[in-house]
Image 1 (cartoon, helix red, strand yellow):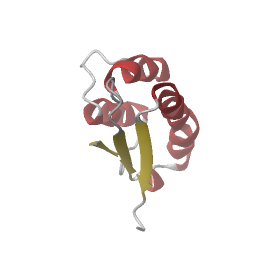
Image 2: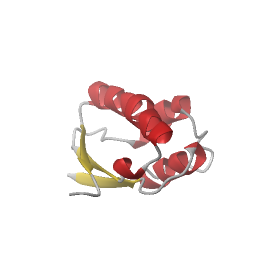
Image 3: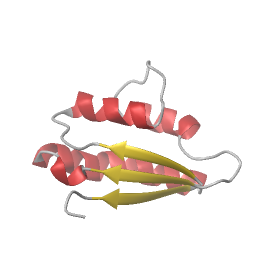
Image 4: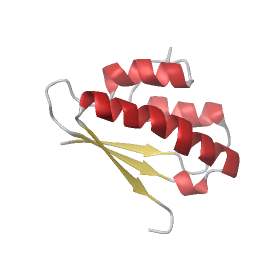
Amino acid sequence: MKETVLDITGCEGLLELHGRIRQAFDFPTHYGANLDALWDMGRDYIGSTDGEMERVVIKGADTLPAELRAYFAEKVMGVLRDLAQEKGSIHFEAENKAE
């Protein structure tokens, strides 16, 4: 099983958050840093095409400022959940600072 760690601990804004997403999933530098780009790139770079599961560990969501945390929980995770449903080879886990 492939494992990807998306560590968003201490992100202060959208650009930093999307930068961490780009790094974690090894998106190309032309990643557009928005939800549409996350969907487009995610279809090519997240999860396996051969059915092998990818475990995505999300760290630090609990450290985000309230507005950014809401954006991440609702918007970013919404896209990631849709990708997981479409591909069937992605499993998400959250690790919080308190753990």
